[in-house]
Image 1 (cartoon, rainbow, N blue to C red):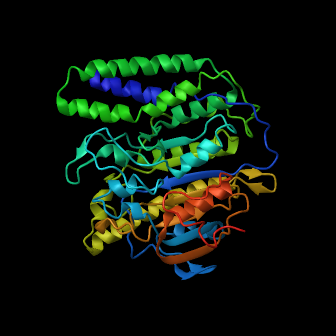
Image 2: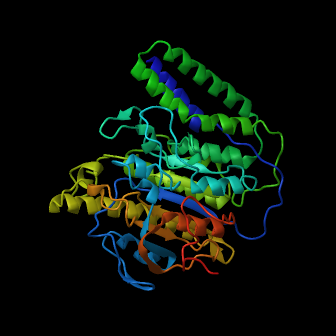
Image 3: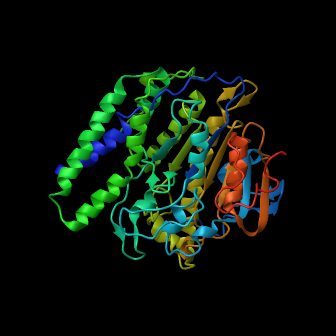
Length: 437
């Protein structure tokens, strides 16, 4: 019971009571802001049903990508990108934890984790003074702790794609109502809650330290792993002590009565509510950077709610070329693409002058594996939607040379976002042909 209470308190600190500061005053820009999001799907794709036919603007969507048909002119399907830093690792973790860092993670079964700074956080750090929240990290599955004995990696790696430093994965928020309340607090002006947030976090960590003295070695390692990801909360609470205020105003006001349920009926509703939170955050301009994880690495969420599916996600991804498993695998992939389309349609319906929020965004969807059966990191399944305020040339299937750096995509996206970098990880330059020069 004591362990259970501590975990709930940590989640409460992460979602319900934690608010970020209003930052240094800056004049609001007259142009529409550019936003960036990454939607991560675990376990790869059925390779037989993913790749479009044709190239350039003359392409046909594959069966898995069919939910994007009404948005075909708003997307770019990218082919032959990979993260070279993940080539030497076993299983999922070395690939999935590094999907946004393009680094080689440190192999460890404990809390001494090591990765890189993720590209979303490079953007968030550059734009931190423009919005109340530098970034938003969302998910639907609690942090996994312990060790995956098959490959020797801590499961912490599989629970995070956003990293503010090589040793600091950012805590995700799982409760849609808590996310909305946080957005509302952030968009409503400076609050007096930061001191209470700090006291709550101190109390939670003190409870965890006391508990650590009462459990065995294995449980102490699990506590250390879990607390290692809470460092990001400490940093955010420290920032909230700043007395500076920013000249910022929500582009669309948030209604406190519009908060969603904190008890989604099922996985599908939970996912949609979290995607709604990204849309609300972007429309109001409470943040311009977001990440969302449909599931942790090695996710075996049951998709029996889909017609024709009788197994878990990870199980069917290891299809061994079995036609029945491949069929179910494709259905699950297509469902994820449909959720992506749901968010894109929602953003497209949010008008901003002569454009809309989707046109002023870059929404990346993909997985860190291609064929999940082989844990294949080559030719990653990736789709980018939105023109980033007119910078991205959409409506195309772009095919690059085999094993082109994924980091080149991130160089281009960061440039379009307004946070240009000369290099990111193993990049060799911007991704050719993606943006207007």
